[in-house]
Length: 140
Ligand code: ADP
Image (cartoon, rainbow, N blue to C red; front, side, top):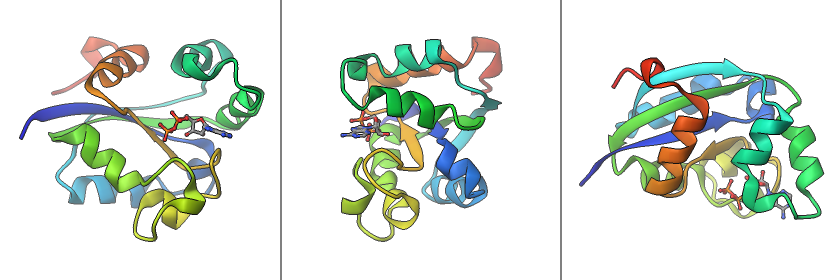
């Protein structure tokens, strides 16, 4: 078991459905602890950086408009095997394929509108945490 940190973003559909409390409860009940938290209106600049591996995809303009629909909630969560554990709680990217009982399966719409982002590896977790939080904003 490894104590890890991961970055979570409640995407605009999760915000509009007022799911921040419900979703945080799922994470904390699984042993995750928030050590940093903020709300933020995402910009095109930060989204191009965050989704740099998708900028050439035909659906990238849709991601840009979806992710800027309203301010989002961000947390850094810490816990044992946090990166894999949180991804497991989310379910797969496509909400239609996500089993009931997962966050995307219960609240997501489809492949693009899928409620939550979470880091997918230790390398991306470190990069993503640094992208959205300054060191002094993390209380771990
Ligand atoms: P995940 O969020 O599960 O890590 P990816 O890193 O593959 O998934 O994709 C990042 C985000 O880009 C997805 O969560 C989704 O919002 C959007 N996305 C991915 N693939 C598609 C697609 N084929 N059509 C529309 N949006 C997509």
